[in-house]
Image (cartoon, rainbow, N blue to C red):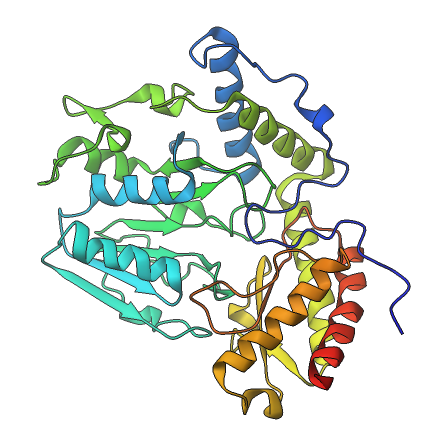
Length: 382
């Protein structure tokens, strides 16, 4: 029999993610539409995004934070193109995005002194092998693998190189110790459910010093330029964006940040994500055909939760038959308006990926799992 309860909000995509509870278009009524982003009202709203983000996340006062083009991808690429090449580089890769940053370091920047420390989906590389006389690039949370670093204790305070962290599905849901990092990037479309195309770039004083003392050997596109005549372009970090942002998206970002403040800030956001993960953990514990892709609990994401099928009969099928069966399962859930966009990422192992970030209600996770059981039983019969 079909379960009697459906998720009230069937939005479990890992990006763009669910809007905050209670969101409606009315939240955008104050947007500075048809106004220049360089007008007083535009600058004020952009600056407010920066100041609220710093306050909620507890970013150190001497770090700068700016809004940059092209989402988290633009932010991390800007950092790599602007900062790398001054010393050797280690890149950690255990899922598709870390692999992309490693590939760009190799094939686009053509770094001569590059080490890639990698691991298969579900695992982490050996973090102790990182060399902190070098710059280190890594993701905090592997969005496509559901594997995160357990903490940042492996990063020494007295490091010589820069710690460059893609933290897009970690900030606002995990305890990110900014003082351990020199570059931190994320996007609006993840944990607070904002819209796409806008990135955030936080820089430590050490990263700023590198920018002002080092000129990369390669040409620098305009949208990557953080300095002029050897000086940091300060305006980027007070709301004077490099290119034209969407003021509608800015208003939406402000709405998410103000909601976060209203529920208790970062501790409340982390608690919501942890409660959602706990609901999935309870289901996995009683469900014999599914398990987490992350091999151990300490590296398990509480946002982009990735699951694998461990049913022996299913795994004996050819790969194309497995893919078709999981497509049937996710399509059935979409047709019933139970869950949208929960298939595994295209480059990841076959399975499911369920977003558990702070804008998702735990009651919806709890309502979702019986429907997955039902869909699985239908797939197994077929």
